[in-house]
Length: 270
Image (cartoon, rainbow, N blue to C red; front, side, top):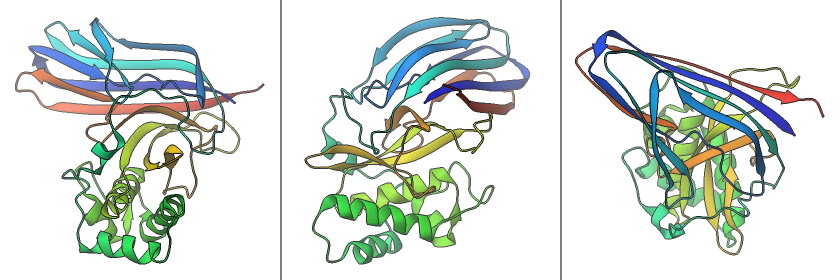
């Protein structure tokens, strides 16, 4: 499948800021499930800095914007060919040991509710792959997809307790539950073609990856009860949403910031 991406993120300030610096993880991962055809990342009036691949294999690029800064506009436009690997992250090069992803964060700390759910739904299972599938299904059932009831600071435990959330909450809860039974897990950011007709639509998405010995990293999208397939574009990963954020930055000054994001994903007829 060939997918097109049009992603614009705009930060606007009520008073000019002294300077702005951005760290971008907006580049497609290199693995057997996708092939880059075209990809361009720009910041309006920005200066491109250095780039590198971190230990998780993700490309990170720095940008700066000269003052005065009224707004910062980050644009991503690209075309990717994708392939269904049944969620398995084959051919992806990274240096971080999987056991490093057993570490909790403030967003993925495990409370009694998460620990109990993980223990109950995996009881009697011996295979890690079976446990991972069972956990993903259980989180999808326990947290109903409901926009605007959580925010960027909602934890996995809080989302499970209220039984509602969005893809970020599903991913955090699945990661926390997996780690509670010693399965390394991490957060993945990317895009998803969700419309049946292939028309462009809001498409920023997140899911989890769980490490299964003998297979490797496998993606699980609890929000959609599936493993990532050719409809998904993978960008980067981290211990949680904050660490895997596609855009992180700072602006110097005391102005108020307003954020506007539009993401459209389309399918090219083949």
